[in-house]
Length: 88
Image (cartoon, rainbow, N blue to C red; front, side, top):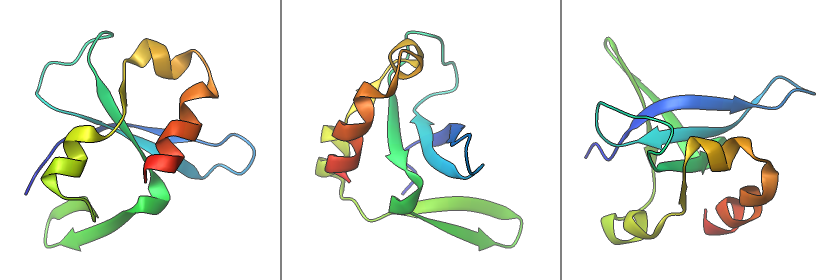
């Protein structure tokens, strides 16, 4: 079941690895849109024919409880990382 689309990736500067990805619902996102931040380690990349996607082992109820942030909150600093890492 598609829950959201990947809107952006957060990459660690020191080792150039993906640390988190940002998931958004809907087509029109802006600076005030709420995004769910998911650690890359919680995802399983999938490749099928011409499609690329990631899967998460999370049920719908838990997904609704996942922490979400605006672009502005994400950019303001790493304070949100502890909450995200604990959730997943």
